[in-house]
Image 1: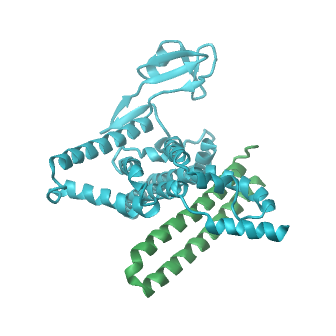
Image 2 (image 1 turned 30 degrees about the vertical axis):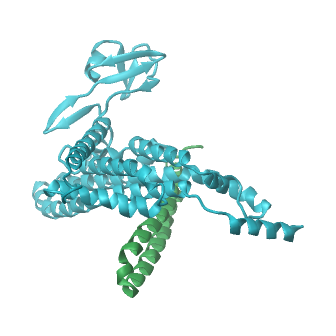
Length: 73
Length: 352
């Protein structure tokens, strides 16, 4: 069961992080298209926000690691 | 936890590597134990030797067992001295006492030092040039100096100045630049043949994130701590929920910093080893002809991944530095609380 949960969890992490980073990319590309002169600032903000989403996804990855390896915390 | 995470990341790859050889052996009704075709783990983990140009250089071992220190030139001499023995792959003392603290110089530590030394050489060389006036009185000269200046100005203007308040950012530029240089070099070492990227080790990234954590806390202003423990302008009942979350947040930030760098570097490494290993797996299952001819696909795929890895090496160093700057900037920021205080006033009025 632990392995099943870990597998499902890993899939859900990828799903959530993918949607999140996809939305960031979408809005960033849209705003760069509207205002190309602000591309540098937008790119910085985009990477920063994506990094935060990645951080949350990595926490979830750690939880799945604990599940997959049957570690009792 | 670090070991656990490593195992998770390695688990699918082990299945990938083991399964074909298992099925190949089943078809020939061979009952002897199966050896993996390629040793992914061995390529990724820390070692007690250093490989340079194909030569293996054993590294010194330093153990602390029950308060006694033991120094050996390498693992062989530790075992040959009859004071230590190898039990199930672990080094233990001859009387069975486990090693309480292993301070051995390992390959990852050596590559950390290489990265730091290279960063030092670059910066000291450039500093001497600036002292002589090249780059201050006249524009920087030579390709190397120009590249250095590009990176330095990038860290100073686009990272430090942008995320840390204008009167304080100068204090943190040295830290941010040195951490950027060191991580970049450590990451790029993984691209060399026989080279290892030391940042693919959780202990290394955790140390770097730990330094950022302490700098963040020590540069925290009164406002920062006020926002951690008491929230100006928030209802007291909500503070009960928010304060633990904020205190947890102090530790999750550097934790995410460490895991991010580690996972990115490790996955790149594993991917390259596995895709190149497919050549040997194919040879094992289908014979040498298909194995060798399929290598055209795998080698070109590896070349593409190699370029991606070189890009990720720089990107992750940038992200680490940028997030460090963001955390330090959040802590060092001083803001005025007029609007907060009025909010508190109105809130108390409403509640009373």
